[in-house]
Length: 234
Image (cartoon, rainbow, N blue to C red; front, side, top):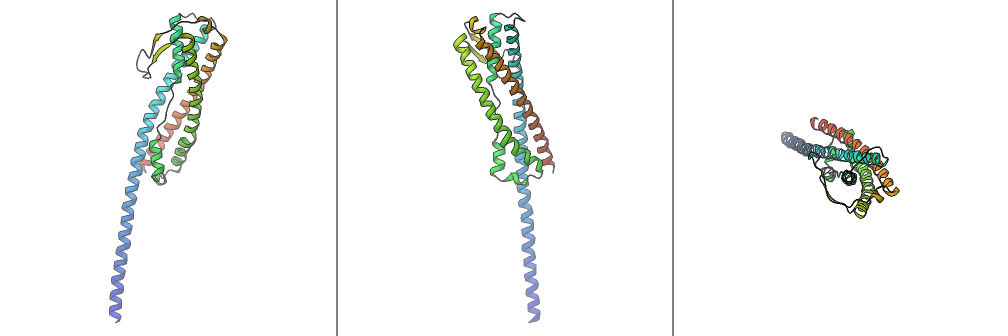
């Protein structure tokens, strides 16, 4: 009887240990699978960040061109430089092009949240900065973008009404002729009016503020990319 008890106890122990070992290896395998999924999502996020940084760089250049045009018009209205009507209309159109805004891609971040993979990120700093960028900084950026767009939509409408301006804009900064003036009727009275001058001053203020915001976002994206690459190495 004692021998049978010892035999069955030993067999039970072997089976129990076998189950524990199987569960351990299955858990480890599942952990590897989930970590691989997390790392692939982080790699996709790095790719998206690179795309967004390129987009930001492009819009920084476009905004700088618009700011330069606003400075030229400002100097012209202050009689510091002389411009032809054609040049004036080109720079007016260039200022209006500041309407174009950066739109971030948020799909991969949302995927990390919805799949709970964000919980597997080891770097707490990365998690904190991810949430701050996508839940705070980009939300604030979106609000500011709408404010800038509302101003420039109104500004461009006034250009259409007062100059009968028809133009095409290109957003590829590598192209030489980015602005094409199709038609206009020069309105010197409106151009030299207090209303236009006030809109020009407001344009410069908005462009400078947006440029500052874009450059700050670029730094945050670059910092986030570095943390993502560190996470993948872990």
